[in-house]
Amino acid sequence: AGTAGTAIYRRETIVVTDIANDPLWKNHRDLALDFSLHACWAVPIFDKSNSVLGALVLYFPKAHRAAAHAIDEISELALIAGLAIERHQAETERANRAHTLGTMVENLNQGVAIFDSNRRLASYNSLYGDFYQFPDGFLKPGLLYDDIIRYLVERGEYGDVDFDDFLARRLIELKKVREHRNLRHRDDGTTIAIYRGTLPDGGIICTFTDITIEVRATYESQRNARLLATT
Image 1 (tube, rainbow, N blue to C red):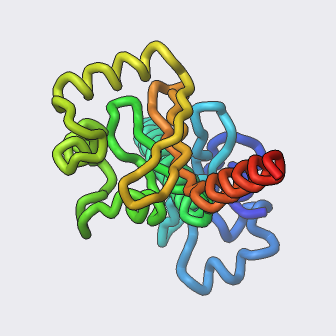
Image 2 (cartoon, rainbow, N blue to C red):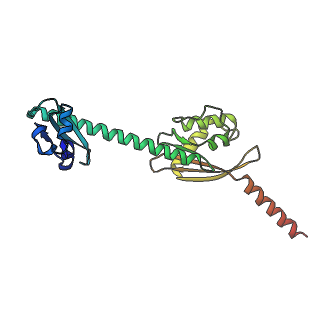
């Protein structure tokens, strides 16, 4: 099993002072000696939940006994290694989740924008940009929700309103009402179904669905029904 495998299996420090004569190395002794490896120490690396992540292993070119202070120093290094590995795993997991979320959001047939608890843009898809026809480069992660509202107000998206007053009312609305739905009939003739919701962490999710075809079909159906009723 060797030194590292035994340390991981037993969950304890293993010191092999002489590989040439240690039974742990009976199956791999010749290979180690060919590379002038004559002693080996291994300290298991644990995470915060006390699960084994691996082992910190030192090899020596000569048979070598382990002093107590040396083992203590290696154990401290193993502790630091465990923290570093956990941090890397957490960052990798966050990156993977973000990538998965981004892929899902981009492939929705709705415009989607997600803001974190500080009202900064965390994720969005191209349809969101298309609905509002933002200029190239305007949308980017970290952009404040307030700045997006300011741009839309200044462009006249909400009619003749004061930005500060409009934003204040919007933020109060988001705090009081966890979910908000409405229809917006735009000047270009499109009708957008808008949903805003407050996320458990205090963030905001907004979706925008173009329902122009459905609305026109409904109006046409109602018009035909009225015509039939009068004939």
